[in-house]
Image (cartoon, rainbow, N blue to C red; front, side):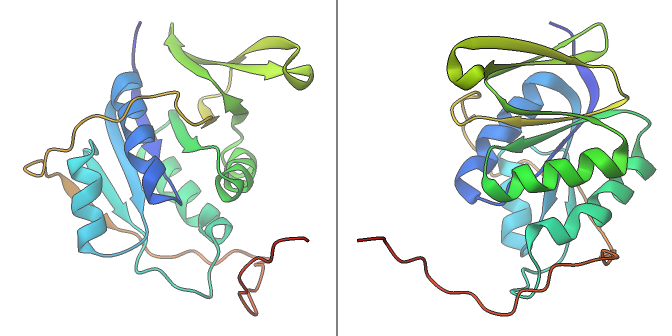
Length: 190
């Protein structure tokens, strides 16, 4: 299997970050990770396999993950002419994937259970028709966004000695942001 030059990773859930970084290492030459958080979060991304970390700043409760789409798209398009963007299949990352697809004019494949790189193109396999069939989609655009299901890639063991280049990214405010007024814990239906 061949590799793609640039793979970008973001995970809004800490438990899925190691998995998508392992997939990025498998599929790409240079792995860049977007991180929202602290220096400890940056160190963890390096330990899990990132070559470069684009630090989006400290976690702010007034911002949702989707607010970072413009910021991420700008960083990706300024750094490379083509790339694979790998995200876990969380609710927020699925929404982020659609926004990145629009901003980067990228093909988007969701719920991929297999991702391959062949002849410079990215292919994702996923279930269709409610799981009755399997579909294979090859992304023809220079940028490809893949949202992977859980368990697609096995996390590698962490190496705390790994380091890399950290780039502080200036936040680009979305033109039409969703404003978070309040957060409440979910209640179970009875």
